[in-house]
Length: 222
Image 1 (cartoon, rainbow, N blue to C red):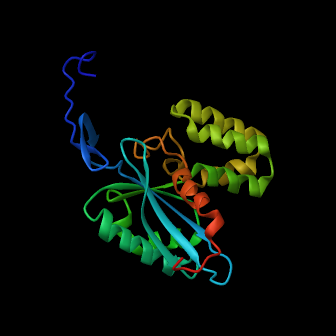
Image 2 (cartoon, rainbow, N blue to C red):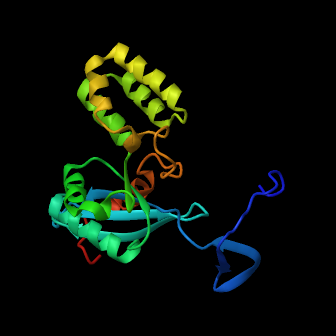
């Protein structure tokens, strides 16, 4: 960037890079994670039927890292409030972060109760685009419209987004009214203002959840 755009200032904070406890020469790693966290939950089955809540981040080298988990009775308001308070206390007490999640009623209620600590400028809450499209499809059963919702979410240009929104209105007025009821900044790239760092879904957290699929019936200590 400095070579091709003279006047650009690059100030990178890095740390030594280790492999097998030895410093690798001429290699550095970024000091911080991207300021985004993804939250998701999955059910345990077998004798102990609980919910496992996970928080996942991604570093500058695109490595997915599980930073927190909680075993709770259910994914309700009290459980989500407990989990969010702990995450804020231990991981981003004084940092501005983007939180990406589904639109589960327990989580939304918990964020509302926690108030200013989980609102802008401290936390920028965004919805998983895949959940928005899935919920839309669950209501209106139109796969072509579900795909349109996904295209709208990923679109970078506001004018192109608005064109697709008008296309949806022509196809399904009720569906249009439903989707405009969700704040644009919560689920679209075009109105996101850069807080997502390209992450439109909770796929990082889903990947961790899928890796646990075969062991979710085991006792907690296992």
